[in-house]
Length: 182
Image 1 (tube, rainbow, N blue to C red):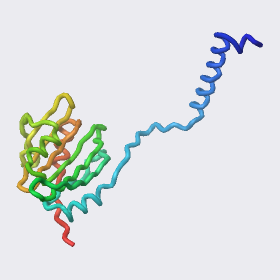
Image 2 (tube, one colour; image 1 turned 135 degrees about the vertical axis):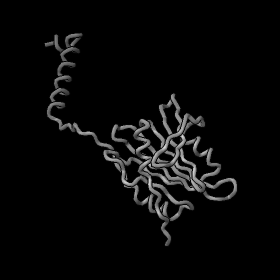
Image 3 (spheres, rainbow, N blue to C red; image 1 turned 45 degrees about the horizontal axis):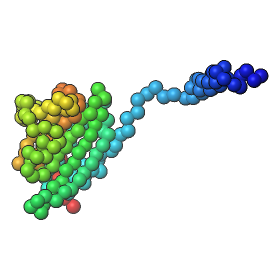
């Protein structure tokens, strides 16, 4: 009896019993084989933006098939001239399960906001989407692509690790939302 309680054989026997227990647990424990991506409802942030932003807000209409909205964040910051800049960031898991984000703000200077969202100030080209020209930027070390549109009162940035086709689809789905006056 001392043989199984001492030395290498005792250790090996104890490990075998533990591994058998873990194996039995894994066989009987329920396992989900489906992917679960947490989703957020961004309608409240959109309504607040339409009510409070000094500019007309853009949002995807409709959300692309297979895309999941994963984050929505609205922020305000004082600018050096004493005004309040309002920014909204809306993140998605795309159909290919990569990341895409819509960011828009009336922050000035607009180029600083665009550079920060794109993580780059280098323009690599432009693309026409629904008759509108978007500036293209790419940061290779972060595998981040960005589409930027400068408007008189706001800057709209579509960015992420998603391929150009998915980012272009998001940019093409954006609709200007009417202001809510209360």
